[in-house]
Length: 170
Image 1 (cartoon, one colour):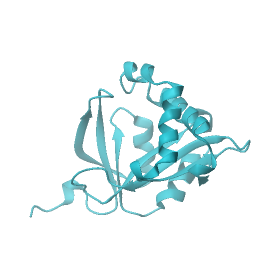
Image 2 (cartoon, rainbow, N blue to C red):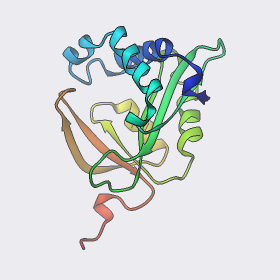
Image 3 (cartoon, rainbow, N blue to C red):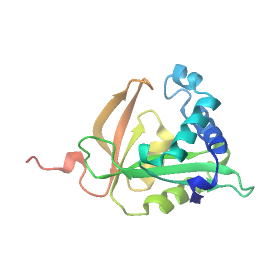
């Protein structure tokens, strides 16, 4: 694991794009996936690296033995207007060839640790991700939201703290 800035937007953008194409085809709208381009991904990461204050989050990249980027993780303060817990795990993206190696587990532990209170939104149809997060102590809540651009439902998961179903009315 290393800081994001040690790698350029070209490599990070290509990895980000590849992960989305590998992981989300059939889970989110094909039209969205088909509309993703390498140029767009590189431009996004060029902006993130040049102006990190526009997307406040902490990010790390995972490095494969050949020194290439194998994945990335992002986390920070929740983006929700009224978050259930203040901290959010935004994404763990791992190239398919590194699935099953323990890399995602390491990325999660290196970023948010084993016990921190966190929330995340996971695509409802992403069974692999939901299983991964449950293994790391996240609990599915009864809260869903529809993501128009993805044409898919997202499910709220929380680790630690009190979930929505456990909160008492004020």
